[in-house]
Length: 374
Image 1 (cartoon, helix red, strand yellow):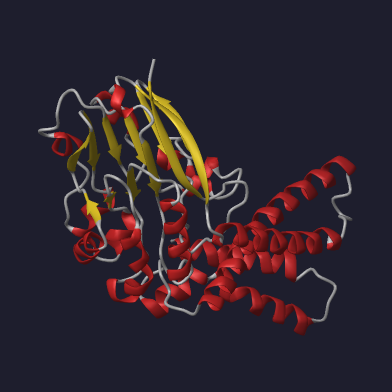
Image 2 (cartoon, one colour):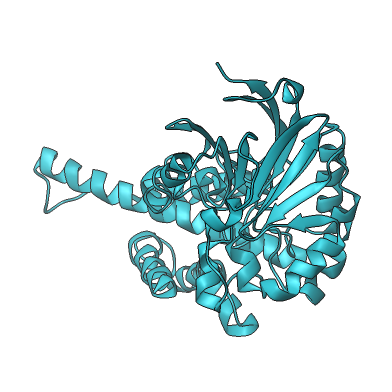
């Protein structure tokens, strides 16, 4: 249905933006043809590559299609808003039979959409900055005061985010001097063979207690059974409904990781927090790695002190909360208090290449400094 909605939106823009323009017919047809590849970007990806998540195309082509699709979505929003305002104008001015031509509005919408789309693409594709968060944890052992935990999430290593970009992320992450690095899912887009070289720099991640990760939904889209051993070869200890006890001096910190709900569609085990916590030391605070923020209230009731999630990409664009918020129980970007638990939803280190746009929701490498909650 997603592709059908995109096709309807494309026809709507052709009818309401391109067709009314005071230009010759052949220019209108050319404009409509130029918009078509980007508007149906995911459809072409599915037709030619078998999925809509990782078209194996050269970077310039992926960048052009991503920019065009992001601009197309913005143009759709601007056009709908413009149509509503025009109807209100007609009603207020009582000029229903002689409406304003609206040419200037349509041209301005196109220019603004593609300009913002270009800026949003640049913001999405750049190296993320380090975002520092002081995280108060209830009953944190004194020896864990000042413990540095770095979260990478939603790297989406692909034809858009390739080897050089990954190397840059690794260098910035290593520069923090973390005690522990965690990776909360959606590391890749593509098969093991397609991404073999691009993921290689992850092997250089360095932290006192190493790197722990979990799968996201995209790992299951591209055969998590093949990706899990590959990620572990790179030094990422993958947890799927399991936990690991991090011993820092005489103190202990339980890091638990659950599977993503997408696993059930592929015959794998779904998320199971009780199983993940089975046998965990009772006195150690629990940091839960859960790709999706949904379910946070239930996790808080099971004694989790901190939940680190991603998946939402922070909403990508300011104002997207009504669309992206409900499937994620309203947890969209950065910090929340859920009962006695701290929930942090990363804006994402990278971004899915199918909608590479960020406006007001910057990517991040998140540095947490643990402090004792009062």
